[in-house]
Length: 154
Length: 154
Length: 154
Length: 154
Picture 1 (cartoon, rainbow over the protein chains, first blue to last red):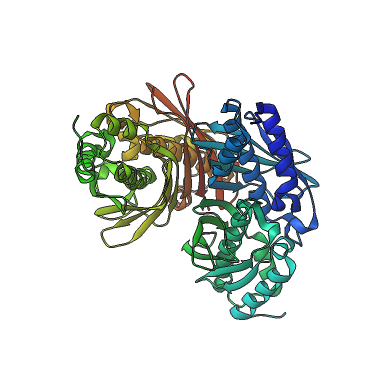
Picture 2 (picture 1 turned 90 degrees about the vertical axis):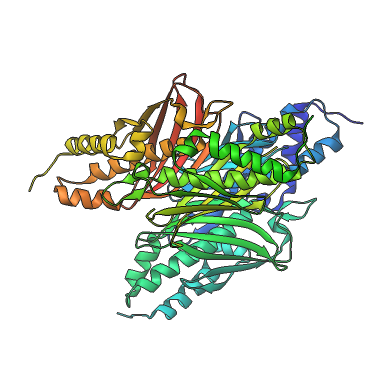
């Protein structure tokens, strides 16, 4: 039975998410931070992400997806870091039980830019449920949206 | 100056959204109802919409996008129906000022199915702000998610 | 070790909440339904509940309190009904771990009336987390507010 | 026609809210900051505010009320500061149209303490709608809850 340390697990899960989650790949998401301290996803502007062509701004659903993804990362990392040398099968079982319970997005400014950064920190952590706060900024530091997500991690 | 009646406007806006909103098109969204009584969007399963490959379920961001889109429809339709024979330029100005202020999504069940229907009704309507409740179901009537959205329509 | 059946437990918990929760008592809340199918709280108008004196409407905090209380009831009842003949100490331990994780309130109309009814049903139920939808109506059936609450029940 | 400058108006509105809003008075709320930069409300522990007697913690409805009140303050102050020397009747008309559209509360830790501070800042400001983020802390700086509120100010 192969056991993995925390950093190995986080790297493996991160690689898997970058490569194997079709919707995140089609949006061009790249995981750039993945620990219990911070989750971060970056993506570049693509015309396919537009919700408003005349104004050339991101669809609100792209913003929601980025915030949900960043929040899920930090929630999952917290769960992983609490595991003590888990077997791969136990890890997979735990990961498969994780999911978003609810998500709130506050849209502050139009989603304009060439690169976007969604970042998340945990505001409530527990064995069963984690709550994260998220922010979306563009490459100039313009704050586009806030998010709050409640995640099942038990 | 061309003026349009309400039904003409709704048809024109609906056609525009089906054809010209890149993110909705890439997700395969089709607007199937668009009035102040109900907004509805349908889309079919595509592998690119997956958030979880082993379990083959929709990414939570797809669910959020569908709910936000349906809620936006019913909010916009209410705004349009209150206009009295607007000019095209005034209509475009009003539409361009519409947007999502905040969105809450409650994920109830895994997003599995071959076709998905996001529907919305208005629970608070006003000259400046509309609030909508949304639901996502699959082709078997399985209830996948609830949503609530607050929209600027002023 | 005294064991109790589900209905005994619900009655006991309901009596406790009616008598022993100071904030609910000072607002005049009375629990009128308490099962996994429905939670319901009624209360009568009192001048002390006003948030707006000229218009004589409920403070938004009263509405939030009523919705949160109704949602908590239906979430707790679901947890209690899943227990199989628990000891009193185990029951108390489980109840003490319950709590609201997050709450959303949508204010639809001014809180006017002589009697108010907050009711709740579960939209997502689980061993660890329950999500409830709530509504506040007055004695004429006027719909004053919607709510959604996520509760820890594990 | 009496006209008032911004600071006079804020002082007058603040005095009115401290003295004349029954529900806030019965909870012991005192407005300690009231500007477009920050809204703040303080209140002291009272046994009547308990939601959980064995654990002696605030009812979640008290937390929601404090957060909503602080958010409303900062939203209203922003509206007032944009007025240019309004008449009293116009001011009253504008204030009477203000209200909470929706509120989200995230409960982070049990509400224990001897004094509580609810503070708010604006994250989205506009002529019609303002969105505020709120926090509740106790006298030791323990962070008890986060909130987000969307307010009609038009």
